[in-house]
Length: 310
Image (cartoon, rainbow, N blue to C red; front, side, top):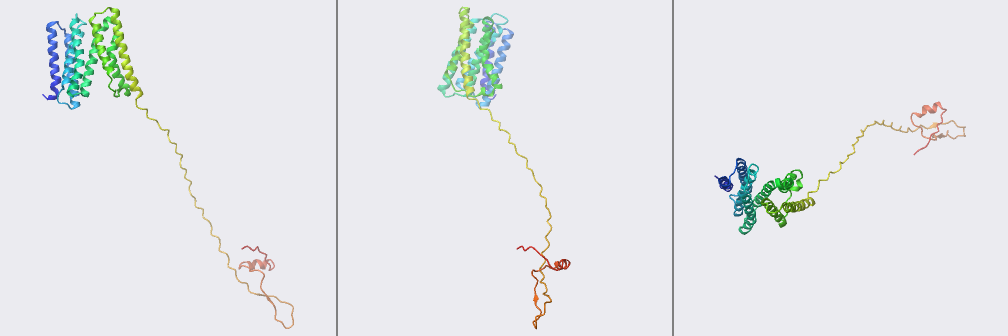
């Protein structure tokens, strides 16, 4: 079997051994067996997948401590589910929960001292804490009221809301108060499950647990809301004026007829009065007359008046 799967399989085997021990000592019904074994199988699969995605070959020292806590939470789960059909040893249930809560302060310290802090280890630790709080709230709800289920369900509601509101899935900065509130939930629920306080005081303890949880989640949601990605701006559509093409029509222009070349007129001999022995006087016309015009001049009596334009 690959090394990457050895840790989760060891945890699955340890869980079955613990369930068998519970069945042999305090008794465990079929519902308890089924719940405990199903929890162990899902934990094994999820942890194997997490190791594969992280590229890790084995569990680190702190992860082994968290795996021990997960086995204890599996035993608590089996006892809580079994309590719906038969009496449950409350003392044993609270003791297992208390050990799991105490080990929550150990795995983080081991990770820091060994230099094996990882995202997988932090996620594994968080999931074990969240499931323990859910199981304890289910155990306390029949006596305290169904509103207590809000304590165990709040984290899962937050995860479900992240699928609808992507900005909720942003990375949160480390905050020590968040870990204090998470630990307080388990402790206060364990106190309520032990039934060592009068009922009014048990209600006060549970209300305080819910108030702390609302404050912690509310602060995280507000932090994510302030840093949510800005919505993309939609640019106004650009209106492009249609291009109107005016067809060019070539209009043929008739060539102007060439100007008639002036034809020098032949001198006209006018009969004058005889002046003794002098020759007749030859006088040129006053204006040059174009070639075609003499016919017109002939029709008009031989005199043409014309504009002079340069």
